[in-house]
Structure formats: structure tokens, C-alpha cells
Image (cartoon, rainbow, N blue to C red):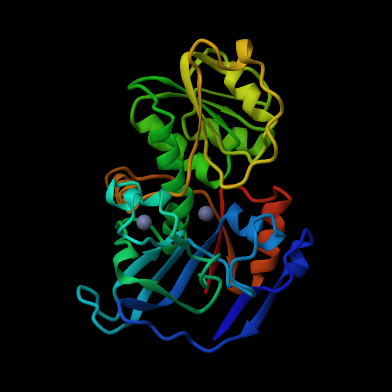
Amino acid sequence: MQAWQVRSPGPDIARALRRVPMRVPRPAPGELLVAVEACGVCRTDLHVAAGELPVRRPSVVPGHEVVGHVLEPGAGVTGFRPGDRVGIAWLRETCGACRYCRAGAENLCPRSRYTGWDADGGYADCTTVRADFAYALPDGYSVAELAPLLCAGIIGYRALRRAELPPGGRLGIYGFGASAHLTAQVALAQGARVHVLTRSARARELALELGATSAGGASDAPPEPLDAAVLFAPVGDLVPVALRALDRGGTLAVAGIYLSDIPALNYERELFQERTLRSVTSNTREDGRALLDFAAGHKLTVAVTPYPMAQAGAALADLAADRVNGAAVLLT
Ligand SMILES: [Zn+2]
Ligand SMILES: [Zn+2]
């Protein structure tokens, strides 16, 4: 099979990845061998390719928004047959035994491993997944539309939960890429007023088309104080901006795995009056199932820019240069 590997992580994205022939992996006991049909291109892939996340597996195959079908269940797998459609996401496995796993916070498991970082992911013709970490997928979406749900959708959903938006509340969304455009729709469906703040004029247009209450520039003040905000842009400079936009008692959740440094905060302007700043770390399988259930019950508009799998390097370079509207998705 053909697969993309991160051969030389660094800022030159076009040179970081190389497409090479690889042997089709064998499913270990408890795993599924999956034929990839679509794989979303996530900003985390960019951080892996750029070397902003440390190398955990040399020459890793990136990609953790995988839609495919089962080719072969490994030994001991029950409940899956060849041909079944499955989704593969970022959280690859957890230990199941530590205090975090036992407390329903498997996203914090110190022994967690991640698809496309610790193990080969979906920028390939085939990949593997532990059967108990594979997701069933909702009907009513194309494979290209399903792929971004598996990270952009799930992480945004957890970030929205972490932001503790009250029913009918006022939500600010900073940055408006793949994850944000899905999260905005979830919040709107739950009755929120959504204010989108982003530097891209095309993204502001998309936000208004999807029903956002307002759309402004990245550092603009929203037209009303916010009960909650989610920072999707990996820009630490926006943390104080978003904190100042919160009403008393409001919460800002930072959705990304990577953020540039946060400048010094002024306690009175940015934190006092019980404003809260929180991070979001990966997700639990329960978050994943909840988002996919939500998508089954509410038809989400998934803005997709498709690329052939052979163009993965170009897709990543486009994402790095902010040339992608919605989500980039690789199709085999
Ligand atoms: Zn654990
Ligand atoms: Zn991701």
C-alpha cells in the first residue's frame, strides 16, 4: 500500500512528509484492519509534521479522522464483520486501570496513546484500530463529511462542554476552521447566541450562513458580553482578548493541543469577577459517542475541501497557509 510518513518534521511542511510504499499492517488481537476511504486533515497533523509536537514514533503515518470499512477483524474481536463501516479518532487507547480511567476521565490517562502520533494513522490505504476504540458512524453523511466529525467535531463538542455555556447563553468562538464551524452549529441547535471572531473574511461569511448571530475580526470585541467562549485559534495572544470579552462568571475553554505562549494576564481586567480559563485535553469515548449521536439527530453542515490522498502534502500546506475553507479531507 501507499502511505504518507513524517520523515523530516520541520517548518517546511511540503518537505516534512513523504509518500512511500509500506506493507499492509496486520491487526493485532483485539484490533481491526481497516481500509481507509477518507481521512480528515487536522491542525494537529500540522503540529506533528512541523515538529511542534515532539516525535513519538519516527516516520509516523499521520491522520486521526479516519472513515473506512473493516477488512479483517483480528483474533478475539466480536461485533465487527468485514465491510462494516467504522470511524477512527485521535484517542487510540488508554490503560483502563488508572485513577483517571476509572473515574471516567480517560482523556487524562497518563498511558494514553494517539492515532497518527504514537501509532500509524489514516494518511494511507489501510490502518488499524482497537475494536473497542472504533466508532459507529451516523447515516446521512458522505464519507468526506463524516471524517471531520471524528476530531474537529468531537474535540469541539468537548470544548463546548468545558466552556459550560448555560442554556440559551451567549457564546464566543475565536477562530473558525473545521472544529469551530461544527461546534457553532451544535451550540446554535442548543439555543445559544453565537458570536464568531476570526481574521478570515471567508470564515466570517460561512459563520453567518450557518446562523451565527454576529461575525467580527479576531481581536474585535463581540457585540455583547459572553457567558462562555472557546478559543480554537492556536494563538496565545487571544487569551486575554477572549477573557476580557467574558461577562462576570464566564468561562473560556482553550480547545487546541498546541497554543503559542499566553502573554502576561492582568488579574483585574482578565480574571477577577470569577472568570475561568480552562484547557481541553483530548476527549473520552463518551464525548465521541455523544457528538456522533448528536450528528445523527441533527443534520450538521460539514464544509469540506476534498483532496486526493496523493495530495496530502499539498492539503497540509494549504491548511498551514489558511487556504482551506471548512475541513480538508483526503479521499482514497
Ligand atoms: Zn488510564
Ligand atoms: Zn485532530
